[in-house]
Length: 98
Image 1 (cartoon, one colour):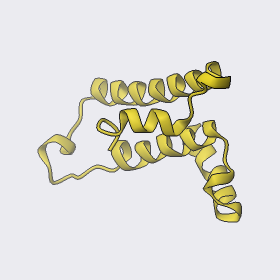
Image 2 (cartoon, one colour):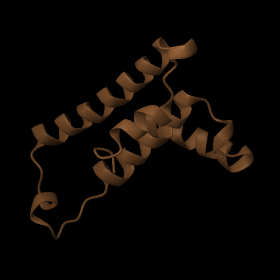
Image 3 (cartoon, one colour):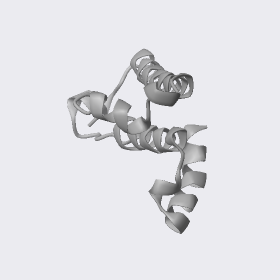
């Protein structure tokens, strides 16, 4: 679902730019990037990517989706002066989300 949303959002970005997206849409784009680049791309020549147990694969996807859901929930709950935007989350997590 996240990757499907990314396709739609990429069309918008190409037409009017990333600044036109809402904060939840920016979050979806970045999490989709994490799924594509960190979860789906594997290197068959490395020991850690060559074979991954199913339980670990499922666990990794649950963590990524859980992060997306938590970020979306946080951005929706905090409004007004205490508003939290994607940039705030991204800056606080930048050492973890590379």
